[in-house]
Structures are given as structure tokens and as C-alpha cells.
Length: 264
Image (cartoon, rainbow, N blue to C red):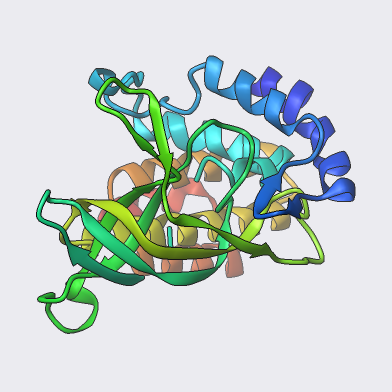
């Protein structure tokens, strides 16, 4: 991953941002070199690094996948945002599928030309769902419907309406996505676990980046990174970890304070 990040994604960081993603005739095109880089990324097995082996993954531990992801985020955040959620209304069909209707804004990588098909993870509520966030479910909505033999079928009624004009990471297509009774498949009825997972990951990354920006000792910064992935994999409560790490930064503490974190 280090070689791929240094030799492939890093050189594309500036050129991709200068060129930016393109939107024309309802289709998004990524900057030059992005599609080839994504093919190398997929062929190298990095997409399924932590996925189950039965689905073609390598079943690697979360500690390893987080470190691999961080290399790509550091060298080219626009590129890394493509392999990475969007709430609407879902109406059930007799065949067990759902019609997803709604418009989402600021959807990173909502459409692109890196792969033949895109699988959207969409949050939506069914007609009989409980009130509030507890009623949110997760649906899988493909760009192209997949036939029984695995080949691509007809285009689903889900696509971009436009892409945002931004100050930075211009190579990453941030889309306005329209779902017009698009066919979706129910994945998860209860999204609490997934949402907590994402919030914890974002919070941990924010703290680590602050640490890396403030620490002048590279070894100390590296040790903080190890502490971050260990705490993440052990599901240390986010807020307690943030408070403790902030205290360590203010007081210029050392990693001798790592033990109290594990007791949180």
C-alpha cells in the first residue's frame, strides 16, 4: 500500500485537483489517471482488505485496514473518497424489493466512471417505520440492475443531477443524486450500530490528525497513531477517548497515560 500511495495516488493529488471532476449530459467523468489508478487499487485487493473471504475479501483485522486507508487519505483524499452514505422514502414491492424516492445533496462519489457499476448505500424510511432515527433503514441501490447470471442489466432510476463546484478536492465528484422510484434492496433494518461506527471513526481520525499536526517528535506521533487504531478496534467509547486525548495534548503528557484509556 505504501508503494501504491506514493507512486500512484500521490502524483494524482495535484493534477486531479487542478482538472477536477466533469459533469456532462447526466454523466460524471473523473480526472485523467483516476480510472487507471482505481483499477490498480481494485486488482491489488485493497478494496476488500477487511471484507469476509466468502465475498472475495481478505478478512484482515480493522487495525490493518485503518492504517491502509490512512495512507490513501494522506496522499489523495479525493481518490479515497470514491471507495467510501446518503435518507429518503422506501415503498415495498411484491417481489421483496423497495422503490426508493428522494434527492440527496453533497454525495461524495455519487457517480463516476471508475467502475462499470456503482452500489449506493441509501438511508430511507419505510411507510410503517418507527418515528425518529430508529426508523431509518439501510438499502442497497445499484446504478445498474444486475441480472441473475451476474451481468449488468437495465439502468436503475438513480443518477446525478449535477456536481458541486468546490474550493478543494475538485477531483472528487460531490453529486446531487436523484432517486426516482429506484429499485433498492433492504440491507439493515437498524442503523444505530453502523452510525455509531462511522461517528467513532470520524472522531478518532480528527484527534489523530490534530496529534500529528501538533507533535514535533515523529516517533511520538507514530505511537499515538498505534494507540488510535488499538482503541478503535477495542471500541473504546468515543467521547471518553476524546476527553482523555485532549487532556494529554494540553498537559503534554506521554504515552504512559495509555493505560487509563484502556480502562475507559
